[in-house]
Image 1 (cartoon, rainbow, N blue to C red):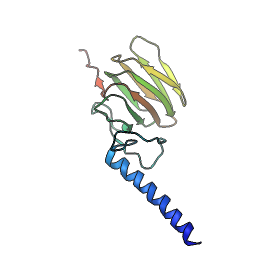
Image 2 (cartoon, rainbow, N blue to C red):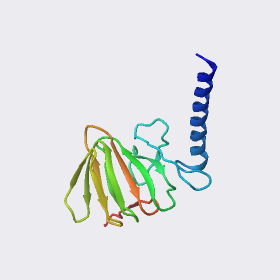
Image 3 (cartoon, one colour):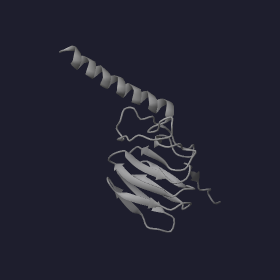
Length: 160
């Protein structure tokens, strides 16, 4: 291997490390000056940072922020639950635009019939409309969700 080839490989590795570090400091996909760069993620990427779901969700639910700031408008996330997981009735301030990337998800919005999402299915969830869901029994469910408003989720209060 000649020195020119080694130097070129070192430049590529340095560039990739610089991009990785910039994601850590400035958020995924953004640069300090406010312009953004493109990127591609899958739900299996090892560098995704998975955090807990809201406290009313049963154990096993995790969320990974893909793009944006959850406290601001226009945030994209992966939402992951294990097989057979029941998502309790809740609602969001924001409308949701969703694509199922893993598993099979049975979703029911208040006043509507159950709909079944399969991998690749797109779903729209209206803002403030209560809904429940259940992941199928074969595989974990991973849902890509684009929120228009800041990320939130509110449990429905049980009526006595």
